[in-house]
Length: 271
Image (cartoon, rainbow, N blue to C red; front, side, top):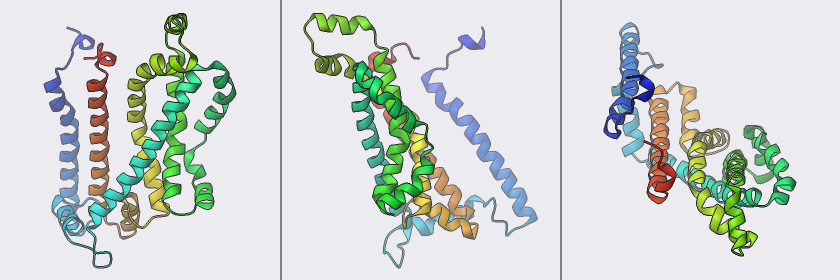
């Protein structure tokens, strides 16, 4: 039987998917042990014990200046910024995507503008945002929105524009207006695509968030990573990066589960 015809069962996917991760962890432990055998003071590849000790201080001991548990305060601040940015970007992408996809005159007018904004590197706009909006939360959230919303708009608009023309014709035959076509025909079919677009935007959204926090912030996962790097505190940086990866994986899994539960018809051909 050819490999292209082999399908992995759902219960087996966890085992197959965790195997490369376990191999990477094992490789790290081997290399770290070798480095510490040669130099017990090595900071580049800390051992699990030193990482656990460093993280315990951030997890369970309140900061004497702020009286907060640093790790949880960083996590909450970053998730608030990320959630707000994703929420605004998702809502704007849905609205603009529907309008651009359903209405050809609007697509011809504003489509080039959305494309132009989508191809601008968002990091290049960061100084402009900080100058125009200040160093507060607004600029950080705005960077996430500007970074992912135009790309999501283009994706939703293209998906809606490619819907079978017969559906639009039948709706018009039954007396549907442009607004009704947008809400009753295009919107239900755009929602699974929207969740998929949000999943694809999670990675870039985290990049923009970490970049903004690294430049101007006093709390957040990105802020903490760039704060401790000057001390070569890899025993903090590596757990923080791993935590960001775990949060991203959980968010991706939640979006996937929501899409399958809410729109099972969109996943009928997937195994």
